[in-house]
Amino acid sequence: MPRQDSGEPYLRVSLEEAKDMLDKGTAVVIDVRQPDEWASGHVAGAMHIPVDDVLARIDELPADKDLLFICAMGVRSGLACEMAAAMNLDTARLFNIEAGTPAWIQGNYPTEKG
Image 1: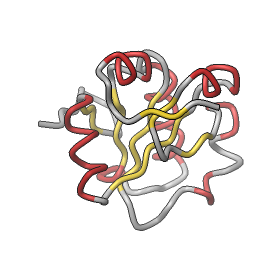
Image 2: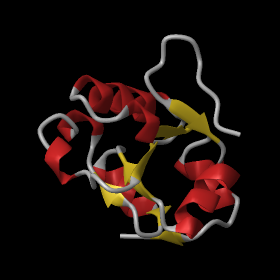
Image 3: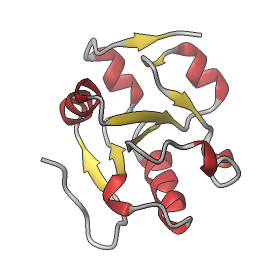
Image 4: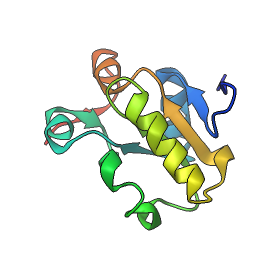
């Protein structure tokens, strides 16, 4: 079950919860890692918006889906969630995949390279 730490304007989800949300078609993954990290492997179908570009590219985020932010370990994706909240996106739609992309890949979840 998604959880929220005190003071955070987003929910934290596990890999399994994120995969379930993707399977239902209600969410999209936004990978906020750097281009070289992205090229080495990422969640299949994810959008790539490096964390430093999130504010400038906020209009590219789908308005009709939950937003699952992911990085390597959950720190940059948490920051991206906070940026999205600061830009007045609905905080009920903001999620941080805590385990990160390396865990996603190691867990044999759908992945793409390049």
